[in-house]
Length: 117
Image (cartoon, rainbow, N blue to C red; front, side):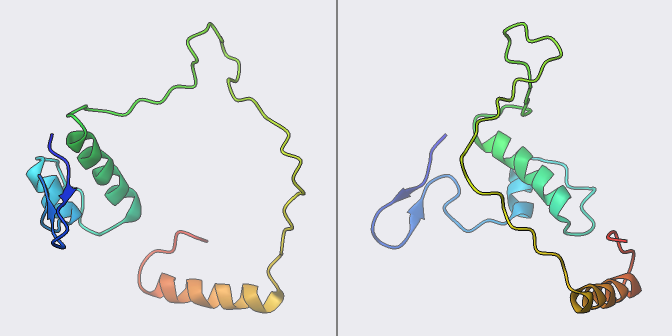
């Protein structure tokens, strides 16, 4: 797969040298976007992952596993390391900020469903 190269003339040359958007890349790689009636971040991320997989050699899936392959049956492979940093300061919202937030959620709810309530 050819990658971009920059020739100094202000142009990128390569397989996708022209500016592309997610829809055109998905179409190019024949990725199903039929569920995309709205531009939602989660669906866009899933489509982008499929485009990335197609662009990077045609693998068909990303597989992540907590297994280290070393017989770690049911145990956690995450190792916590002491960082020596101070704990982060938690700032709680003021009553005015909470009220403004509720007003914003009211506006969102007026235009459709509100997921944050």
